[in-house]
Length: 554
Image 1 (cartoon, rainbow, N blue to C red):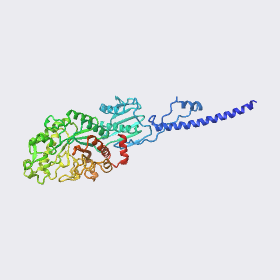
Image 2 (image 1 turned 120 degrees about the vertical axis):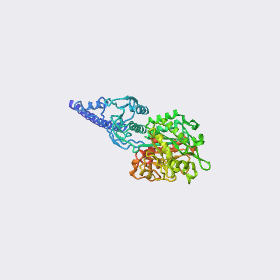
Image 3 (image 1 turned 90 degrees about the vertical axis):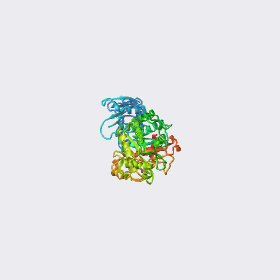
Image 4 (image 1 turned 45 degrees about the vertical axis):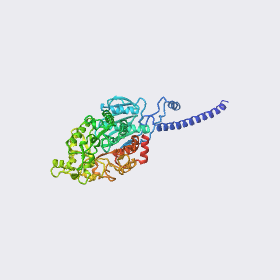
């Protein structure tokens, strides 16, 4: 009977073993599926090889089935190779790695290696919702979730390396500007996708000058609007903001030396100081422009005695009489006054469109200028010589403040015995002026050039004089910094002399758009321009994908 009773028991045991095996198989499949979910969700350590905790229910169940002597290894998380961050401008190099990447999390900190990075650390911590933990030495523990900012190494001070590994991020560079740009890459990637990819980014700009120029003389813009554009520019890695604040229609910044010239709607100096400070915190220099000897109508409205008049006594619009010493004193007063307000390295002297030079015979039309030219430069002196001498004298004034100066290309006059100062850089915007010269003439002469090509980079309100609003797509697909005039690039050998470029807003018909409409209209052109200034090569991303990325990043 005992044997007869054991037979059913044997069958039950067999059934139990079958159930256990099936359950084990199902558990293994479920565990593998769970691993796949972990990998896709981006959790875990940055090594890509994290194991289950030994105290987990899965681990305990496995030990119970197999026995303590022969434990089954806990499964390893696996990750696909990371892809490069998707940012504007695109990073120039990314070494892929396997791992979950990095995203801000509660308790995450920002630490810095150097007091020079305090501003960058505090700004980024606030933007990403992290705690700013101050300065930490190289040997201090970096916790998972941390962002560390380091100064060190050599090379371009605007370059940086961003390493995402082990659940933390390290951004390093030889200069604080480069470290800041690394934080912009991180911010964009986190805001656009939530996670910065595992691996190493090595990045730097192709061009050292990456600008946006704003005409606040013809159309006043509020300080808040300007500061919003600065924050936008900073996140895009621009490093210059040009302010054209004096023209025929208005003089838009408070003046202590000549308050009589200031327009009713203007920025107080305290507001300008705040604008400069907001820009400096984002490694943007504000480049002022007081254009002369033309475009001075607002100044001359308060000083009609200095207005240029022709032989018949008819005033010439916007032009100051450069034969009068009082004219030079007035403009130099302003240049000296605003040098303290704008402490950056650059200054735009203007120099364009002096109307005395647009007539058939300037010497006949403006005999007082012709007489002053002969007195200064001898019997063969011309009005063009006198105008070039004016530009050089204003350069002397600004040079005393240790600035690098530029002037518009049509301020560099052809056929003069007086030459523009050798250290003047060329802001090339047009080839339509009288006696127009191709960009290569300036380059052959050894001049350094900044690209303002009006074919692509001029956003002129109201679209007068055949101007049309530029599109981001056209800039993205056709323009590069060597395309200085029209649609044709200068030879590659001149690449080092092309310092960069600037997108420009001119307000010729000021009421054509509100400032909010301007912001919307320039949004994609600004993004396309910085892409080509950061990397002039053919973009790998289509325009449609680039636009969609811009919309996702905000």
